[in-house]
Length: 109
Image (cartoon, rainbow, N blue to C red; front, side, top):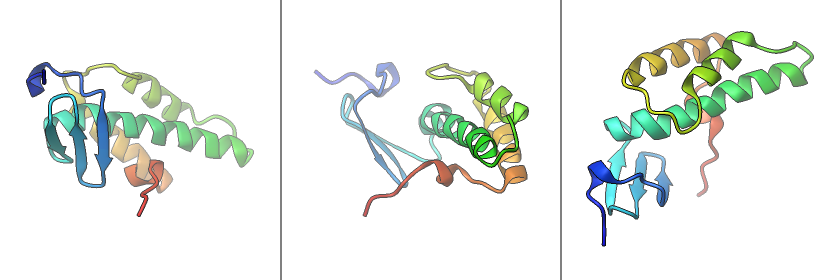
């Protein structure tokens, strides 16, 4: 039995460049949807923050404290009431380091 989208945890995901499809509730969530932005996008931004720090360490530049702090604020599996604020702050930080949310993904064709 499929769960209604608002009660589903969306664990069985098929990711696309324009959103994700949840096989648990048979619902597609586009990139502009609140469900995508509050969950999938924040997860991607967590990876970008981690990668900013990793690239700095590999290049001998040391830890990027602001990226680590943002990564920790986003967290893994955490729900944020004001997720758009976190997205905006993370996007500003990404711009500073010349990366985008797409830098954390690989598109298969």
